[in-house]
Length: 84
View 1 (cartoon, rainbow, N blue to C red):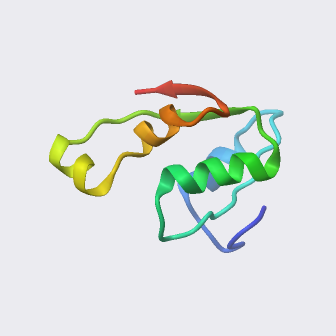
View 2: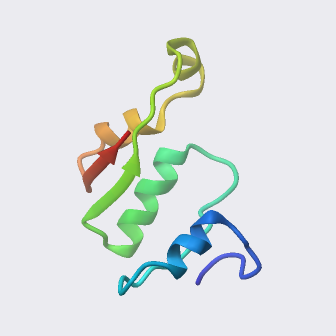
């Protein structure tokens, strides 16, 4: 596990129940645009698939703050599996 070893999060519980899938938890950062942080991490580890939740927010909120789903969809790589 990378990042904070003392982190007790839902991600840790999910990683412990991965049933044969090697799962690592990595804290990417607390500040920054989430879509960019995810895409940088995917590129750094050489992943060819990103699985993520896709959620919409009110248009004004997305206009002001941006949207992670929109950032991921606009990126040429990696392949995406989105679920809502």
